[in-house]
Image: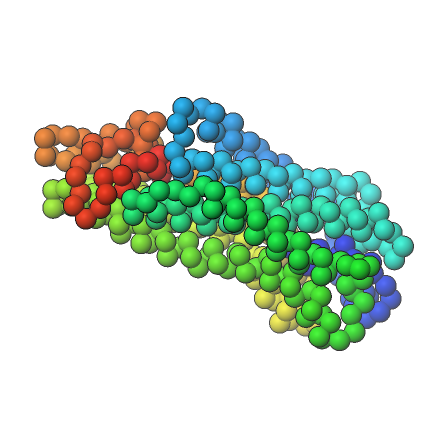
Length: 352
């Protein structure tokens, strides 16, 4: 999983008050059970990401849609993040040195590198999730995609936040437990928490707003050609909104435990029951890598049966939602002229 609390365990521990508290928590924390959960969930995540890449990948499409390209990079980031969790949990299961000894520099180095790797690629998944929603809105507005900008931000911002947050935490000697004042704690540990939780919170706030607005805009697109909105058109719009809703649900299910964990740790660390902390960590260990599998389910092309195919009686043209090049649910609709919206509003988004 990706969590700043676990990253602090990469620091050398000692006999001061903070170190004793950490050791007590880790004694309660069944390391073998925890890493077994990480191992299983990361394996499932890798399989889900590989399915998304190789079964529904760009190489199967002659001209992949703009949305499909974003999903591909989201799957790649998920794959590499899950791989980092797999490697870290495998070594911790074998050597059982999740908490480095005072003179154990090798364990500190391994822990910090794998933590940085996992943190970087999970942060990239959060930004690709955000840019998928942004690109949907851009497409509905009839605007071109901006792949160069997306790549620059999706890979560049995580590199900056991860390097800054972990550098402050570990440099110069990885002794983040040896902090005697509140100001030192805020300066050394808080930046890494902000680098982790601020992007998660942004996606949780921005994405639902974008999808709500996108659903309303698509409803206008479907209804305006004939100035009517029948039950068939309603079912199509409802299917789109359901997909938007499930995309948001997956992100919340996978990352809300992390946000709750951060809030509780910074407000109730000294009084919070150890079992409560451990329970949240187990949930994160299960759900963070599972994002890749759940993404493979909600971002795939949706198949719509005949009863969900809206009929536009103007010229007896039917919207067939079964073709590979579908803009929203898997098809290429008849080219209808919509006065308030460009003709390319929803014709290039084959992943919805």
